[in-house]
Structure formats: structure tokens, C-alpha cells
Length: 296
Image 1 (tube, rainbow, N blue to C red):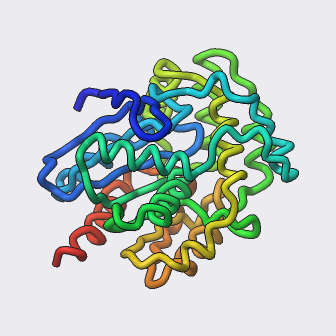
Image 2 (image 1 turned 45 degrees about the vertical axis):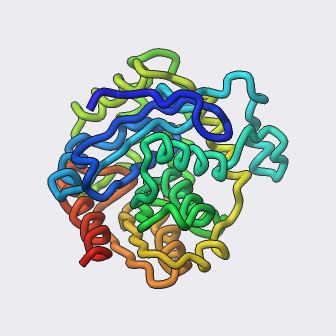
């Protein structure tokens, strides 16, 4: 479906760019993407797999990404200070980003949905489930964590390698994306270089805002540990995590599954911090299985 813009929605009155796919009469699945990513980072092939399983799919740009509202007038984010406990540069938190999700569902007149989040999107999805349990039918947390500092941390080489690049143009952004996938992608699956190039180029063309990425990063730090709140959830939960994830160690997925009562933990050998084409049917089958188990 063509991209649309929900204007001045929610308590923040921001714009949210979104797309919908499939039959709205089918169960609604809201896809939430991670940091430094846009809704286009949800592969269309995966969405087609979900729609083929009779699901109505919504993907969207988080605040400070893609074509949604960017907080250019907010304080300059200070990530090093935030890591040291000074959160004064935080413009918002994951709670605000969760509120954006609910505002979009309200705009679409969807009372309840199945929430799926990847990476930081998993943080947001968990926060939606914690703060708006009446709106969430199920939770799927992919390659994500609880916010606890002792689990789900990146391999130190990830930051030293990827952070060493400071792209200034479209081609350099594409090269950084290729480098990132070499480091954190799935070693057990073939790398689709053409798809990585195309998606990185399209993301750059839609919007390139590295300061917005920093605002999202500070928001994550400012939001703290969700473990105790996750333990109070009472809803069907699926946790998907790759055993070879170097961006978010699988201990984060394990901690999430351990925290949520009755959660199912689906480990995938050879999967890193991406969504390989070969795994799209498996992802879709797992998500649809959770959705339709509820209506069986």
C-alpha cells in the first residue's frame, strides 16, 4: 500500500508515516522497527508472508526516523553523558514512543493488535504491552532485551568497527550498511548485498538524520530496566533471537523470555541481528502461530 501520513496524532501531536498491508478484517499486527531504522527495514517479503497467513500488517516510522516527525528543535543529545547517568539531554523516552504506537492504532481505529518489535522496536513493543495491556493481544519481541545492563549487550567490536565510520553522503551510508551487516548480520545465512544496498539507499533518500538516532539512543538509556514490569504481564508472548547476534547478545532474549510468565523462547542458530530472507517464512509462521493460537 502507498505510504500515508497520520498528522498531529496522540498527546504529542506528531506526524507518523505508515503503510498497511492485507485485509483489515484479519487480525492486526503492528510492526515496530529498531534504532537507526525505518519502516522500510521490515522486508516486504516478510510482510507478504504474514499477509499470506491472513494477517493485516501495519508498519511505520518511529519518531525521529523516516518521514515521521523529527525533533530537530530538541536539546542536543549527549550519549556519553547519558551512559554516565546524566539524562538531562533526553528529549523523550520509550514510553513516549509507545504512546505513538497507540496513537497510530487510534488513527486506524484498531482497538487491539498483536505487537511485534525488533531490536529497539522490541523495547518499544514491551513498553506498549506494559503500559497499554488492554490494547495488546500478543507480544513478539525479536532480537531484543529487557533494558537490564547485564544482559543483551553488544560485542565491543561492534561499536568500535561501525562507530569508526562517519558517513557524509549516500554512498558512504551504503558502505556503512554493508560493513554493519558483515559485523552483525547472520553468519549462518547468505548475505543479500543488493538488498542491503537498495534498502540503505532508499533509507538515505527518505531521510538521513544521525542526530535523531542519538535522540533515540538516549531515550533507550533514559527508560531503564523493564524486567520487573515484564514479570507482571499476562499475555501470550513470543521471543525470537539469533544465537549469533553480536549487536544484542542472546542473553537479552533469554532474560526477556524468563521475565514474562509463560513466554515462548525461539532460538535460531546462525541468525545474527538481521532478518535473512531464508528466515522470513519461519518468522511469519511463528508470529501467525501465536496469533491464531489465541483464536483456536
